[in-house]
Image (tube, rainbow, N blue to C red):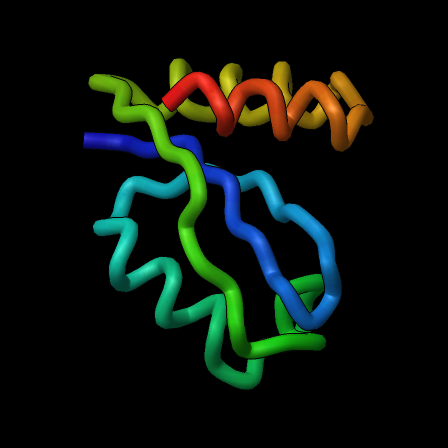
Length: 82
């Protein structure tokens, strides 16, 4: 199973969109540990939205679609639908 997910950090007041083939719990743990990317600036990330897919290409395509919006409002509308 593959996942597209949205994380939220209250400290940064920002969202992060990603995809993974691992479990969401493992991926979240990685984001919340001292890594070097965008999410490394904070350790309070939580999963606020996720979708599951059968293939990596579907999950990646959905991630790219959400990122292409470049709109916090549209991301928040997506999250509110859950």
